[in-house]
Length: 585
View (spheres, rainbow, N blue to C red):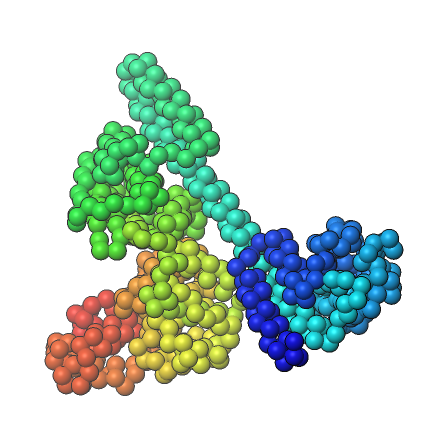
């Protein structure tokens, strides 16, 4: 065969065998395939593949193909063909294996008299292994073309080996993630079983005490308490030893109705269940989480709310199902919840497991509303980047930035943090480049005055919503940020749900200042109200009594833009309504 024809045939063979490597991601079968392909590529029948450990200056003869090279053994990196490859840093050829320094083939073997070639396998510049091929007979010799062809194949082999290792590492990480997810599921199941049972037991004990103080017989109630304790033990065992069925064969509505019956019996509240939209089948894991979120919410009502009425709604929407639990109980200040505990954070964790999210709204004295939105389809990670709210986080402390990103990731699957900025000076460029929907700022990040960063960012994008996370307990700083045109002020002890609510509210054009902060601001306007030129124009027209549409026509801007400027003017003056603004101005 002519040299040029041989080269073309060799390259064609190289392409074919290299392509075979692309479909194998298991390391051991891949190494066997690499060695077999290497030997066939040079029309030979024996060889070996070695893996190098540079930390110990040794190599292991990993795969042996009719070579008798003591596969599985470890040798110093100055012996054998692999040692010669390591010293030369390139392909090596020997006319006879007998010429190899520190060789391992027995002189009695027919391979001892044959030619041998070895080439390095490199990952980038690191030597990770070698390919060794023996000639097919005593007369065969290897030439430069053979060395070049085998080295080209070794390059493909190195890529395939790297991919196989990456796949193995990814599979291991996925396995670890699955283990942690199962542990979290088990923990929440135990919490459901024990927390719900103990809530029932405590309520029954309170009634028993009332009967006892009134001199009424308590024997029957003691029997009920005993049954409740036995039920707790039974449910705890079920939670530990195996997952429970979502609704024991009942429909989702029937399962939710039973949970309401339990709440009515335990807490003495009036309950109602309403379903909206056309019912659609849910994935089993989604239906399970709907029922468990309902259980957790109703347990909180029974144990803490002191409510008279509980309403549960199930809404079938175009993209997913929404569960809504409302009560008219005592409520609580979400911004004051330093630790949500397993109860509230468990709701978020359950929804996140299936790609959904939970919103909790509560006002002291006015009840609580829990809304869980869960998708019909895959997890929240299936959302495209275009569907998520793009958020830039600006904070001068790396640990805080990492914590904020993690909180947002777990509490708001629809939020994507597109940049973490450590210096205020870099924030304007990030906004210009990334065009985020919201910027979340640590209150101490701005060094040029409390609201200097807000002014700079609004120079870049006047409509950009800003949310401030308070890093310090300082009323003056709070007032300065409130007059700087921010859309949200979040206390430093806020949990992920509260932080996510503030970001989402800002993106939707709403202003969210937590009630504890609002009380400290006390609606008092700042002595020095700084308005932009456009805001001053809006204020002048507002004081004349014009409606938003009329102001939009006068100024040549949209009604929505007028509404945003009006909101900013109200906020900077520390008032809650246009009427209050007019009376103070």
